[in-house]
Image (cartoon, rainbow, N blue to C red; front, top):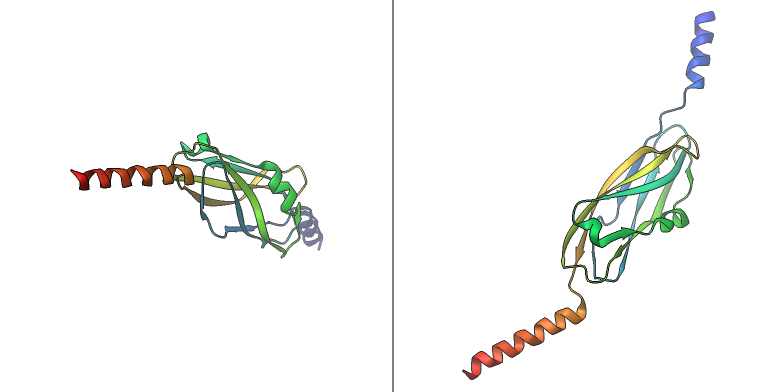
Length: 158
């Protein structure tokens, strides 16, 4: 009896394991230089304990960090600070800013949600990958098409 009571007290003092499911919808988005891209998704607390969502970090694959930056305030303004056990959130999660003059290309990153059992925990809770496809600026594309048209016309006249 005494062992059972002691075991019950020990296990009740341990925090219940928290599991966060995290997915971006869609994880691949297109943007242009000088624009912002909003990533939305789903967060689901599959654990037995309430879960504090205290921060978000984005690790960019080079050279993405040179051209993309996260709007950190967007996360705190949109995502709930706590997900109760079994609760989910579906909506905007973070925003990336594409710097003016960013060359067209494919840029990738890994997003980590941090938090835990209290408002100060910064344990990694869930990870998701993302891809940003940067298209040429509309003015650049128009300039290139005009130049190509001139070259084609010049070839016909020769």
